[in-house]
Length: 584
Image 1 (tube, rainbow, N blue to C red):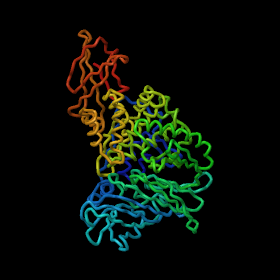
Image 2 (image 1 turned 180 degrees about the horizontal axis):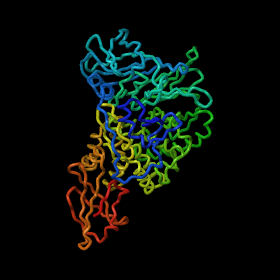
Image 3 (image 1 turned 45 degrees about the vertical axis):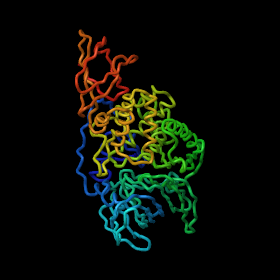
Image 4 (image 1 turned 90 degrees about the vertical axis):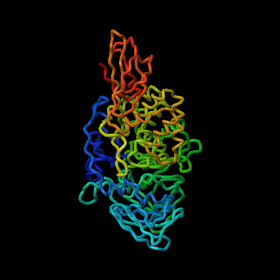
């Protein structure tokens, strides 16, 4: 997920801003680019102890618009999305978009209405079922489409949704400069050429095209056709099918997506692009950058092969092989658009040249290439079914960063890299947010989330078993939309442990576990227990001396162990478990 480099609390209106972006206000620096990764957080942020909490901003109650966009209501749940063909014409001079989306779906129950979504800033021109024009009602972004007769369970239907208008732009309104949070940016490159890109995670795909704008249901495959001025190039998702000169100063670029794709991943990247390509085995790699940056890109993008090698080692082959892997320069730090990852990290290592985790490892690699591409596995191949469970994207993609480090520089550096995220954790809100209201979880979904996954590895306490569990977890849920409960159930079954209270404490509570220790030096003993909020919590942890750890099975009840170590000699492996420790 990428967040825009502006005063984020001013974006998108009061509820969305407070819920989604104010969590980053203390971390986010204003940048000259149009948007930014949550890594926009200042690298110089003051370290916090593990239990430091930041006062949470009260979350406003969901609005009707939130519920319509975020909920899986009856007119979404009554159908199964099968296919899109998005066919649009983009006029950069007028900042205008027009076209149609062909939508194919299977009915899951008899009904006479379905919900498709389009932002109120855009016009519904007409909606056709065959040659019949369908009636519709609009409420906020929801378009309720009515059919003249019952559409039946098990039958497949195709509608064509025509639309047009001037979409809200990323960041600011065209007129009075009020914050709006659209999904498309109309920019110019340094040479004066049009440079247009879409980013709509959070605000929704419906900000620029008509779609079933939710996360639970995905089109099984998709075609994308984009007509733009002849001098420009469009790079979208999927495999390039060719281009057609339309004879009116515009050329249509056609792309085919072979795999399921979530709505916010669908993207346009329009500009004066130069192209070069490579291969990793039989996987095609395509790169699109501004002409003046092609030499820098060829040097920096050489890291892509090493990134793919690392992720394929742990998880299996790149999930969108038929579509290939693309990396596209854009006026933002980055975004994980499926098979069309966007990049704006200035062709340098670290994050915008900074040591992102502050432990001397980030400068060894290009953070945006490594993080955004990790989402091809977690976020794109595996997708959360609701915004509330976005940690499935962000925590796991952040964990893959550490696996990339471990693959190339060893386990010690991988663990060191993960622990570099501790100062960024806020512990102010649960990682799993409210469901059905388009709620975005707090920034802790990245940093606390990755520290939790590292803790999970230590609980398993067998790397060979952990690697198999990680690989099989990904393979089991590949091309599926899942919830936190699915993750928990899988790990419980495969690890042979009841990990539910551990998941709940880290994901659904704000505080992390505190290991309380009471020393009786004359008796040579230490009493220990977990202080937590979650009933039934029990978690093993390594204690003692670093080179000869002892695993204790701690619960919320006091237990006793013998130790020759004094209080200041007795250590807890806090680099392997994200916990706090209190010694008495």
